[in-house]
Length: 302
Image 1: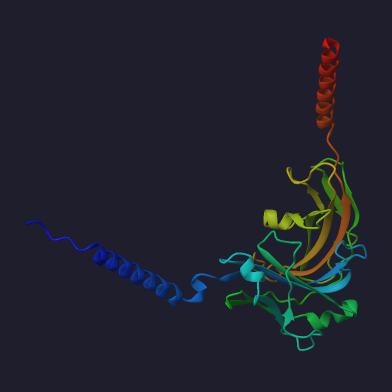
Image 2 (image 1 turned 90 degrees about the vertical axis):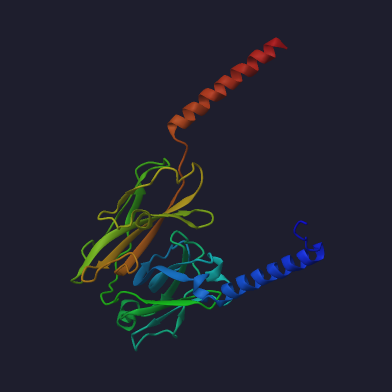
């Protein structure tokens, strides 16, 4: 006599019980793990520096300001850093800090080249006279939608100065890969321990979203205020803004990707629209002539 078979109802009951048991175990393991195991914010970098922005700033953020900037990522995606309950804040070590603390750093919707960017541009009503009130270190805290927080203390902002606005912004042609150059009116920092460097940005002329930054792309700042626009970024007949930046870095501190030792920056913008290059126009013209010839021959056959 062969082995006895279990009734189908019994087998089904065993299967259902087993599935429910496995499901319960999975849920128990999932929710029993620390929240950080499935959603963790992390810093890409954080900066605190003073900035001199021009009257024609494309974002309307002109004047002398303290800029607090954080770039962060999260294993739960960008939404984990921008959704309900998420927040990014900073606290100054300076007892004379002229703003309410902690400072809320809002999402920078125009810049997303390094993850999720948060930027606070705090106007210094006294200009350079307020520098002593904003020196010191800043502790940054990023909290995601799962209430997971990470904190970091940035470099010591102790050598701010007012860098003159870049002048003479120009390109050597109107192609999609021009050389963009500008002039630094006073390239020698006025404070010992500083070195002047340069950066270059490209913003879409319609959305004002950043599509390129030299420092983010290359991992370094330039020694000279001249940059070649990389291929594949600009589209003919589309408007852009090319942005020049002069930056003071503190050579007495070790500058790292997480803690760039920026002390000061000044910026200016150039509206720029590339035009189709001559080779493209020649090809278009040849194609137009060929199409015209075909149309003429077809008319003769009618």
